[in-house]
Length: 209
Image 1 (cartoon, rainbow, N blue to C red):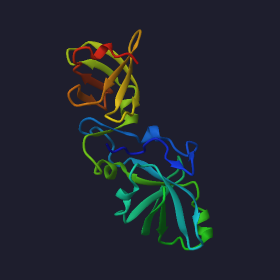
Image 2: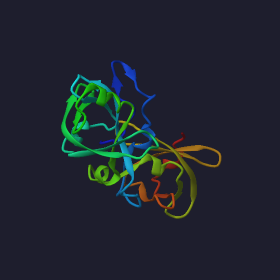
Image 3: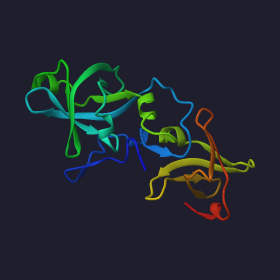
Image 4: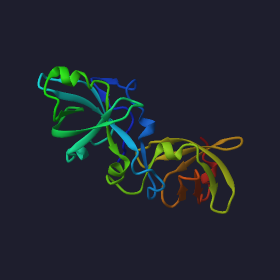
């Protein structure tokens, strides 16, 4: 199962939760992605320090498989809440749990220090092309969930990762429900109107959260 912006990766035995906002990027695989802004910029890595003295950058990846990004020829870079600037990538490689990247025009350690704590970004369309049948968690959380027959179940609070598949935690009027994120159950997802329709199999709504 592929996840973009998975739980914070471990590095030297510690979680970098201070850097990451994985809930903004985590992907849940159910049905086709839709109703998303294709030009939205998505953070895929965080520059944490220089690497060496020739302008290389040490990047903490915010996706589960950084190798998917090695075909990138250019990258958007910017601080949080600031406009991005486009850089040409001259070299990129995986180094343990990190990514080492070299950018055109960044040739000294001083240059690379100036980019510390900046985010690497791509357009949302690039991430969509990494895989089909995916939703960003930020588009799922807060959805109103009901059955295909129109019975209201509640609000989607959280996407929980399990080895088999994701599970949606739904808050009902007086209890919580655990709904597996599989095609046989999740029948439609309207990200624009924040509505999800499910077809609960026998006993499914007895699963308490």
